[in-house]
Image (cartoon, rainbow, N blue to C red):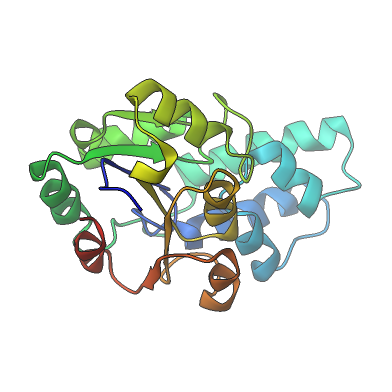
Length: 215
């Protein structure tokens, strides 16, 4: 691969340890809507997708009214009611700072909506590290590579000059689709065996291991 000019991060399960809250909030949303509650494994599988395709997979028989209720209940649970902690993963900010000090551009490609990512940026103070970001309501859902294509076009970087870092098959699959190098993280939603199917450069157990791969 060429010299790395850009590192693109997924958010949930990669930078922030939010998988537990996503799972419990989605299960509570189903319960409040009065439809079958999906398993933990099923919810972990859809993490990273936009909500519409996620609902297609988790609640295929839900009608339009139920889908609207699911959306509202999920949003309210995640933002207001669910108290499952969502800390940053260890060394997340230090890694971002190290890469920024090397003049590597940083970006986010996330299944969150813009409002949700902006809220996380405000809570964590990490927005200053990122040159740009793309969210679920600004691009086609992962694993379509639209988010990545928008980011590299905006920043003037070739796909082989960037690295996608993510914890799910959806992250690695979208990077693979445009021959962008990719690194999996083992501390998120999908198992290492799943991530290995998408030919990552590496699968790391700690974000602190990432800078060694960015040369």
